[in-house]
Structure formats: structure tokens, C-alpha cells
Image 1 (tube, rainbow, N blue to C red):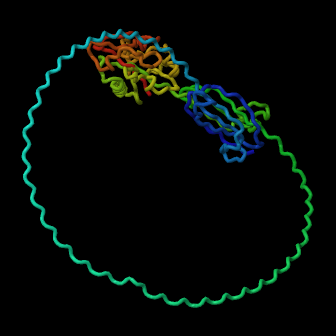
Image 2 (image 1 turned 30 degrees about the vertical axis):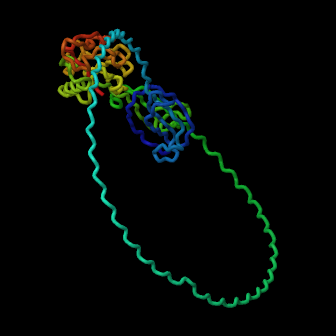
Image 3 (image 1 turned 180 degrees about the vertical axis):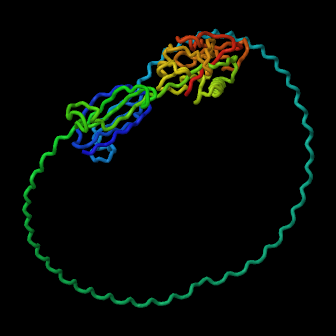
Length: 407
């Protein structure tokens, strides 16, 4: 039997670590193969995932073609949890009374029409000159046509010739005989019973194959070769033909800025610029956006990408497992570590509800006011409950930090 060398493949996906052990009919003396590809959100995976097709390499070309596929399984990403309820909006203040309309002033009198001046006199019309005499008309020429010549005589019509005789129809030839059916060939021998293809999945710890853990997927033929017991329904180590890995991606970074600012920094996108500047100063790679919202409804819910690998402080401590965990009203740990690995426990400009949407509250006039005449909502960097993003409001001249999340 020809055996194929196993090879490794590592895919990134927020995979749910579960697949059933299945068996499908394979071919004797062949190897099992698998194909792995992204599965979009749909009926197979509500949140997307990885599609794993497997089967025996019947033609021995080392590639799993469509006719060779014996089964398909799906490694699905975990579904996001429900968003938390949004807080009630505050009551609208009463509308003030409309002022009365002032009286209309009197219309002024119309002045008298002016007197028209006298018309000027028309001068006398000049006399019309005499008409000259009419000239004499010339005489008309003769209009008689010339004489018509005589018509020539019409020639005689020739006689029609006689039709020729119709030829006789030939006789129909006799129908040929049908040949005899040849004898049936002998039935071939029944082929040997094929072996089944098997697939197994096991959790893969963080290490060489997956940096942050994942799922190990193996396929092979239940033939006992080169080692193992054939037809026992168990994929043994000696029967494995191919191994691949579905790896959970690493978490993205989150930090609170080591610098503070009053409530005027050119809006939400100005806060993004502060985050990017602080990350670059600390040598942190990637793009960073601010956890902040304003009255234009520019908020994390609409602007942030969802990390399937979760969120962590810059020292690797996990903050949340995924977006649903980040926005459920509590964190694993407080986001109190700055981009410089120092600790900050003060206030953080926010105006964001725990579910990532604009809270509808004060935001320093779209984060453009730095006086004590207006207010902005803030969170507390030393909290891991809902206070982390909403702890109250303060005047816009108060120095506060900003939360920053890698995208």
C-alpha cells in the first residue's frame, strides 16, 4: 500500500471546540484527506466558522476532489450574547410659552394723482401722386399638338408543345434480417470490502501549533496501516493521514492613556488620534480607537471591529473573552493599565453605555468644550463592573484619561 505523509495546516478562527467522530465508506489501499475553508454566517454556522470536508484519496493524487468527499463537518464560532438593555432617556424639559404678537401700525394716506399734460397737434398729410398708365399685353402663341403616327400590327402567338410521358416507379426492395443478440459476458468478481475514513478532533493547547490554543483535526483510513487495528472504528495514531489545526486568534490590546485631557479634543475622532499617538509612543503596533461617543451617535457599537480572540491588557491579562463579554456590563479585570504599563485609577471620558452605544448623556458639546459651564460623562478605570464605562458626569474642565482598544 502507498502511504501519504501527513502535513500541518493552521487556520485562525474563533472555533467552538467540538466535532463528532464519523465514519464513511472509503477505498482499500488509499489515504484519507481533508480540506478546510472558512464557513460564512448562515444555516451551518450562525456566527461563521470553518468547514471541514474529508474522504479517501481514491485517485491517489494527494488532493481531495469533489467526488472523493465522503463527509463534511463544521467548526462553528461561538454566537455573540445578547446586548444589555439600554438605560431610559431622561425626561424632556417643558417648552416655554410663546410671546404675544405686537400690533400692526396704521397704513399711510395715498397721495393725489398728477394732472396729465395736453396732447400735441398732428401735422397735415401729404398728397398722393398720380398712377402711371398700364403697358400693353403681348399676343398668345398657338397650342395645337402635332399628329400621332399609326400603330404597327400585333404578331401571332406560337403553339404550346405536348407534355412528355411520366416514368414508372421502381419496386421496393426486401427488408433485411435482424442480426442475433450476442451472448452475455461473464460477471466479474466482487471487489474486496473497502475501509472507512475517520475524523477526530481534540483540544490543542497553546504552543507551537496554535499560539493561543485551538482545535486539532485528524483524518485517516481505518485500515490498521502502518500500525493499529483495522475496522475497529477508532482512528489510531498509526492510521492518521493528515492533521490540521483550527487556532483561536490572540486577544487584542486595551489600555487607558497615561495622559489626561479636558473635554475638548475635536470630538470622537480627535480621541482616536490621542489613542494612536499614545500607542506609537509606547511601541505598540496596530490601529487603536477610543472607547467614547458623542451626540452624533459615533460610538464603539458602530465603529469597533469584533475580536474573536477577546481583549487583554498590554501585559496579557484577559479583560473579556469576546465582544459579547466586553459589553455585558462587567469585565474580568479593570482596564487600569496604561500604554506604559503604569497604573491609572482616575476618571475616563466616555458617554458610552455598557453595551457600547452612545448613552444619550452629556458629552461636552461633542467633546469640543473645555470650560466648567458644560459637563461630560466619565467611567472609572479602577472598576470592573458597569462603573468602568459610566460612573457619573463632571465639568468639561476636569482632566480625564481615555480608553483605547486595538482593532
